[in-house]
Image: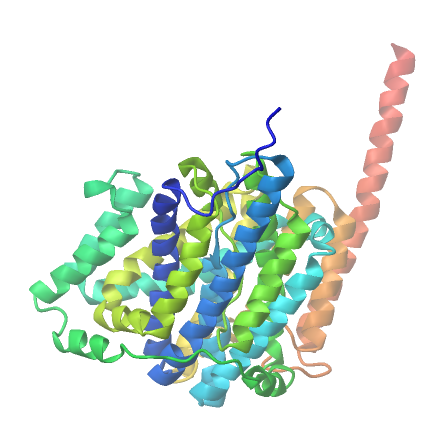
Length: 507
């Protein structure tokens, strides 16, 4: 009789490959955050002294907890082939927070520090909502059409992510086009890079080297990057409380972005955990959503304004045969990199045009996913849900200094862009329900649009009773129109049933 106690290894050789795969994924996010925030005008002290360390804390805590879950599952099922879930900053949500929270907060306040605090408050609240959603995530997933939600997010992706980053790519064409070619070849075409290096990492290395060799980047950037290396203490604070003053005041409109993206993040966690279950590792979805929510809140307490999630890369780690060691190592390495300024150094040294093509792919993949995740019949719903963010992009980029240009194109651009996330979801959902001949739900969502418009969450610059009463009336009329068709369709269906019964009697 074998009484040898069960042992689940802390680390095995397969964890090494999985670590590098997850490392470069998180590294790309950290560099994007730093480069983008610095480009928006946020001071290096906030970016490298608060944001990056705070995000690293969230990554560490989540990775350690998922390593613990893997150990618990391994001992329960007496298996050594259990793989810990991959965890980090949610890439789609990161972009929403960059361009949908931080940017408008800075534009409104003109104060980078206050904008950062507002983002912290939004992040903390997002984590809290996801933790609560863990009790009702299935209900939300079942009642909010996927085409509407993903379509609205795709609107952000095609404008602020793919479109904006393609502009940045062409600012340095000699370097940007080569990096874009590497991304298309390696990620889209799935052609292996030399020495099996991940395409995104290869693109960063080659693009950065070429930029300096051709004089497209100043050698002073290297000196600047190395100057960021130092010690950045990681300390908790209550700065996010200051942000709540604005979040529930002048920036209340951010809820139009915050609520749907949090629901998306919770569903992303749910889908990724379910995908891993197919490979044999069954984790509790509710617990994982709660962990992601708590990790997000903890990151905000330490200064990181970006929500976290379980990665779909978990499946790749499973295929590699990884255990829990790669997850533990990932969390520790990022904490050290943040504490000693290594992320800061890379952010200064790597040109924006080198990172931009990678983000073009991220945006395009989000748009592709929005269509691929839905049946062909729902493609019109995805498309219409995307459109409000075209207006949001125009009003955000041009309305401040060239409002007459926007007005000259159409007076509808600005109101359509206000509360674009809600508008996209409402229009997308209505289209889904019309396609399904569910006129009742189409009418319900029309009335929801009327309420949101009337209180100013859609088509208005700020919250107020009667803020967009003309739009509210339009949605009410739309809803009544659908109610008419609801009864007409029922009558038509009833007549069809009667005719079928008559035909049966005749036959």
